Image (cartoon, rainbow, N blue to C red; front, side, top):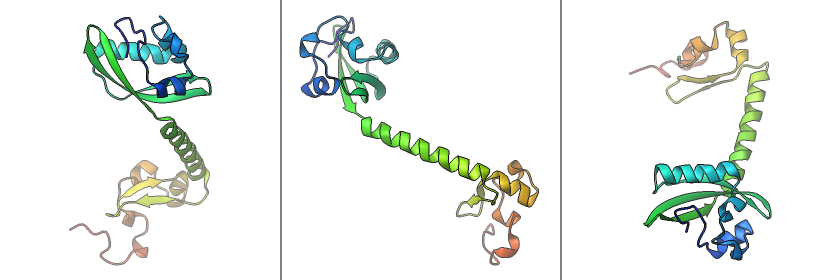
Length: 165
C-alpha cells in the first residue's frame, strides 16, 4: 500500500523477502526509492498520476540479490492511497532474454548464410527470405516477399499445389 506522497505504508512478507527491504523502513519517505531504480520509480509515479487504476506495469527493483522484475497492478483505495499488487516476473524476463539471444543468433545465421533460405505459409506465400535468395534468383527480396513460392520453384511443386481457388 502506498499513500498520496508515494510512501510505502504496507508490504507483504513476500515483497519484503524478495526486495530484502527492512520492514522497519516502511513509512519512510524513500522506502520505494530504496528498492526502485529512479527510472522505475518515476514510471510508477507517472503511471499512478495518469491512471490511478493502471494494469500490468513492469518494474525493475534493486534487491539484495541484484535486479529483480515485478509486474505491478494498481487500484485506488481513496484518500490518495493506492493498493499495489506485485507479481514476480523474473523467470518471464529470463525467458525473454534467452529468446532474444536465440533470435539474434538465427538472424545472424540466416543473414550470412551462402545458402538460400525461404519460409512460406500453408497457402504458399513467401514469409521470409535471406539475402542469399536475392543472389540465387536475381530478384530483390522485396519483390519476392509475399509472393507465391511458385514464383521461385514452380517445376519442383506438384501440379495444383498452392493454386488459388
